[in-house]
Image 1 (spheres, rainbow, N blue to C red):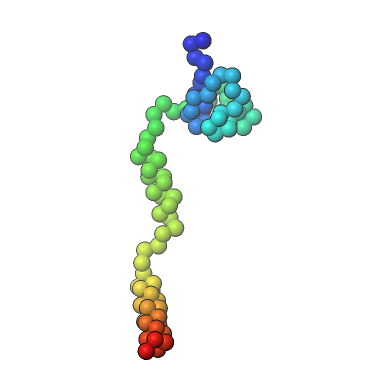
Image 2: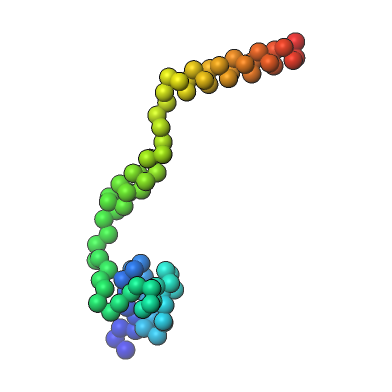
Length: 87
């Protein structure tokens, strides 16, 4: 038994040949792997990090003047309330 495992073409984990599904991602013949599918030999971490950065930075908005004004007004109102309540 030279190779008693193969590489899952979906996630790249080693899968024993007797297994019917990948224990890591759950792929099998019905859900996506096939004997002629290929997993890339090289993993480019820079591409992955760029994709993650784009994914999570899309929802962020930079501070705007309006946000600063609203925050300032909120602080003034809280201080005024506390001053009136405690003094």
